[in-house]
Each structure stands twice: as C-alpha cells, then as structure tokens.
Image 1 (cartoon, rainbow, N blue to C red):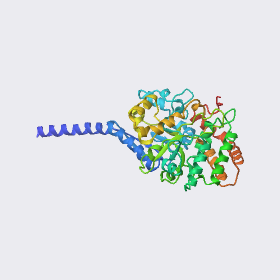
Image 2: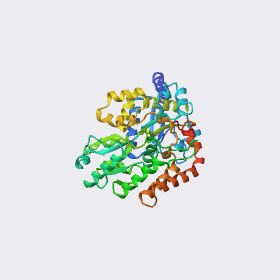
Image 3: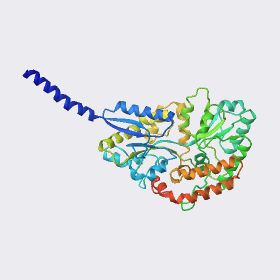
Image 4: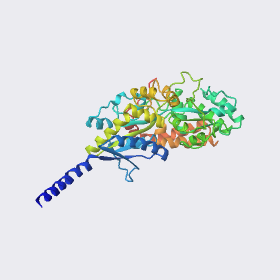
Length: 430
C-alpha cells in the first residue's frame, strides 16, 4: 500500500503541475477583421502558417466585437482607417509593442509612401501597412486582338484609352472600360498623377475641383454617354465584371492581379494608371493605399508578446514574398522587395513592377486623401453619380462636392492628423 500510495501521489503531482503549465504555454489572441470571404480565406492562410510554426502563441480570426472594443490584433481597411485613428487612444502604437517585446523592428526601413498612412510625426509606426497597392490599368488582351489593337501596347494616356474604347465598342464589346473605387482612382490618384491639388494651400480645405479634375470627369462623362465607360458601383463591383470577361479595360488596385491570374481563360495585361500627356510634368506618382494592422490597448503582456511575434512573422522576407504571391500586395521593406524579385515568377512580378514604378518623387507628401475620409468619399461618389446620370456637368458636381466636403471636414481633421502623422494640414511641396 505505501508503494501504491507513493506512485499515485507522484502521478497526481505530475498532473497538477504539468497540465496547467502546458495549458498556460499557449497564449491565444484574437485578430478582428471585416474582410469578404475570399480575402478572409487568404488571411486565414497566413494565420495558419504562423500557428503551425509557433509553439507558444495562437492567432484566432474573429469578427469585430459588437461593443466596438478592439481585439489584440485589428485590421483597418482604407475606408475605415480614420475610424481607427479617431479612436487612437484605444490602440497601442506598434513601435511601442515591438520595443517592449524586444523584437527587432525598425519602422523607418519601410518606404515613406507606405508609412504615410500609419506613422507618427517622428516616422514611428503606429500600425503595420500590411496590404498596400496602387491603382493600375488592366486590359483584356483577347478583346484587344479582336478589336484590332496591339495587346502588347496598352494605352498610356487617357486619350489612348478613349481610342481603345472606341475600337472595343465597334468590335461589339458593350463594356469597353470600367473602374472600381472611383474616388481613389479618379480623384485621389488622377489628381496627384497629373499635378492636381487635393487640398488648399494650407492643407486644411479640399480643392479637387481644379482644371485637371474637371477635364477628367468631363471626359469620363462623355464616355459614359457614348457607352465607352460603364459604371457598376462605388467599390470593387467592376472587378467582377472584368474578371468575367465582360469589359475590355479596368482601373483598379494592383493587388487584383493575383485574383485575375486564377482565371486561366482570361489573358490580362497590366499597365500603369493612364495620365494626361498634355499636362506639364505628368505623370508624377500614384498613391499607395490598403489595409493596416492595429494593436488594441489594455491587453495582457503575454498578448502583446504574441502580437509582436506575429508582426515579426509578417515582416519577415519569406512571409512578404508569400503575401505578395498570395494577394498581390507590395512588399513592405527593401529586403522583402529584393526577396520578391528573386523568388517570384515573371507573371507574379508584372503587377508588382508596375505598382512600384508609380511610387516615386513626392508619394509621401499627400496625407489627405479623399477616399479615406468616409463622409467626404460618400459625397464625392454621390456627385460623380450625378455626372454619370447626366444630372450635373462635371464642374458643377466637383464644385458641389468640394463645398459639401469642406462643410464636414473641420470636424474630421483631428482623425486625419492622428492617422497621418500629424501632418495632414501641411501644404504639399512643389
């Protein structure tokens, strides 16, 4: 009996000590997102890769809490990043989390054009620019051939897009050109690419109703009347119509390239966003935009350690290559970009090279973006729809959009500054 009692006591001691230790060895943290099913599936692949190689930490994908409380990890999309910035007290700056966890991390190694949306005034990262892209022109090479166009010579200017659209229409295509994200593509990026202003001299008022913008929207209106341009909606609705082979040309984010490659029946070319060659100094540069990763405030030390480990996993060159291959997003650091250039196939690199080529010169000097100020974006798209419907001419619609936008902007500038490193009111350098 004494021997049996001794063995039983030893087993009980082992269970009471070993099992709680094992249970405590894994720290689970929630990753909150609002992605659609396709993008959520890609994010899940990354999370599964991290969980498979991590013994101490586990990430769980969840939907946002009903009370608005942030999770440990939180994904902000371009259209709700200002909501995150407005509640920045609810989030812990990324650089502080990485420093406290003693994880090697230098936010200033990230390209300025990627840091502009998530860095503070000193260049430290408040959040991780996880999935960034620039707008590009996609074109259906098969449709180009049928219309007698050279599939290896995509349109460079908007006048060449008009010529191609006419050829495609004459060949029987009823959607020669379409576009997703109209405020991002046709206000933010078309303005900046052609030297137009988005803000006034002091940077605290909107001013996207100049000559360049009026000319551009008027041109699109004429295309809409001529059935050269077909409008499907304010977000990415046009992507699906182009992917289905209905349209000859599409302007959308460079990250779409990875999705389009999954359709073997679609022969797609990728070209830079068109510009106006009759505007002095054009083309200038595009604006990168995308999703960012924010870390919630008020969490446990072990949860912050898990978050830091996950961020280190995400910024590792091999993971960056996987993110680029999987979602078509821009690598975040020079080392990651070099790794992508050496490891990705030519087809994977086509869109990446075009997207990066558009990021140059003053890309980081435009912190105020119409497409990221949700109330302003909705105003702009409402006024643009009035142009497409023939209810307003381009100049009246843009003048009205600017006036309406300026009426709501003062109450929003605090969030813009919080989002953009406190520099939203700075005038753009010439």
